Image (cartoon, rainbow, N blue to C red; front, side):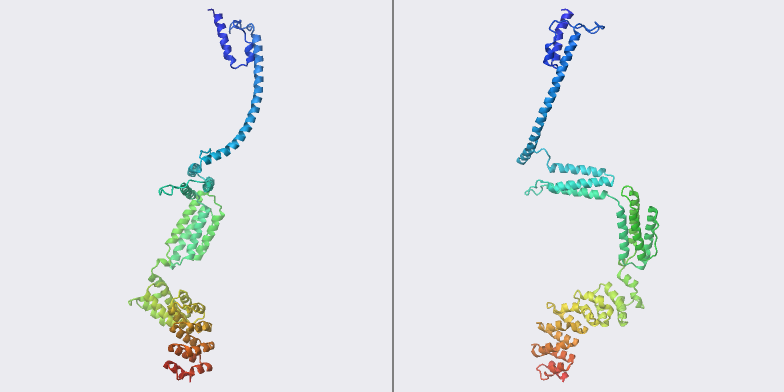
Length: 510
């Protein structure tokens, strides 16, 4: 077979392959089998092969036809695609509803459930927290945690199996992890200038609210001066002490706190400055803690510091506190006794301090005894009676009505009689209705000590009608104490009474 024949047979096969890309119109104009082939490359460089122009025109016409059809096709496809898209959009909307319904029926929805997404989100927050370097980074982490917390509250998570004690609660686990991340977030924040101010103010509050020894007050000066030096060096300020008393120290620290606030320190840009100031406040607090305060001393050291033992020539007698107490009692000096009562915790010393105060009846003990009497302390009430002030009368009247505690009533009635305030007359007279004869008897004597003439009538009734002769005798005594003509007439009628005690009182009135 010749080369021409081989080319002739190969040509149609190439055209067939090309026809896959060309429209049908172009295939109709292809040369028939055996047509004269154009010269191959290199055989006619100066002129095109015969029939090449026609082939080019045919090809161009075919290309134009193809392009035209393609453009029309594109428009058609776009139009159809648009319609399909709109229909598809409607289908999607319906599909979402269908998808939701399918999800409720048990089919897996497209969107993951919260128990799957929330742990992943928390993982992301944890990573962001580890990489955070600025306050803005931490603010972003906090915002993410807030969002997760809100979603967790609304999430419908599966409940743990009640029959399984070891079953895990997804909601509880997520809340626990969320809380841990918030704690870590707070630990990473700061330090802030507000932390420095808070520490300075706390130091001032400690100095102002603590009872210091003389030595302790002196020991406070050094740490405050050192802090102010550090503050001035760090901020370039000039805060100084105006005195060495605790009040002067507190005033200087208040100024220091204001200086820090005015500096407007930024937690990122001034991080080192804030850290230096916090280190200085730590040293300040350490110095304050080391200063001597009253609570650091033993009771005897405190009494000694107050000069309690100064009245003793020696301390050989045991206990020395009691020996000093007897001296203060003779001198009628209640203040050292009140100091010992407050500091000494032994029942022995408390009993002797109260006894001394009762014998003295000094007004200086009024406040201390009133505070104790508010707790229904009978010994303190007795002291109030000896002091004789009207101030505690209103409080004592409440105890007169304490029918459930006759001993308290008896102690209070006696104290009211010693005070002698007519404000108590009616409340005391009301005790004649008590079932306890001792209370009725004490009420009668209290009225006699008060001396209010309004008590003559109720006392006369008791003298005439009470079943207990001891109560009637107390009423007769009270009438004699009031001593008016009417009061004496009432008691004088009982000179022949069956009870000797009543007769005795009647004879005094004659």
